Length: 142
Image (tube, rainbow, N blue to C red; front, top):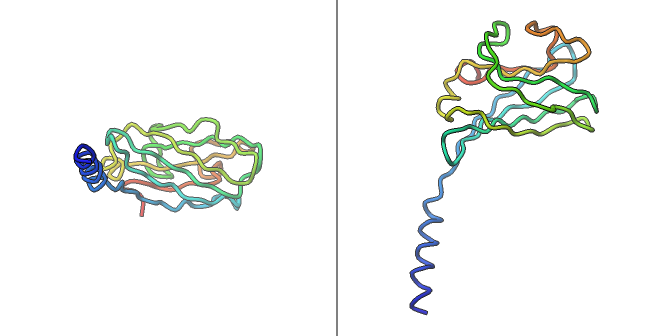
């Protein structure tokens, strides 16, 4: 019994030190009456060197590929691609994806960034008429 007590105390102290991971939710705007709506959540990771980007969207057309990106800049003034979300397609009307972004959480909150989901039917990149859903994030978001 004496040998088990120190182990129990170590486990309890480790559990008490567990870090609560921070999150920031950004609502996304529907474009072109697409019916696509959702949110983007930035999630702090335990290693602090990356941030998890979580996308939840509804109102999608099933089995349609939606090119989806994080861009540097704001919605109408994009300058560079920061992150590409591969295989953004669902067999249903909704989708849930998580992807690592190689930026610290605090830096992600200060980033000059926006999220854009393009329509493959009218793929006019870099203009809002090609978006089905978009939103500013980081220092540009609300």
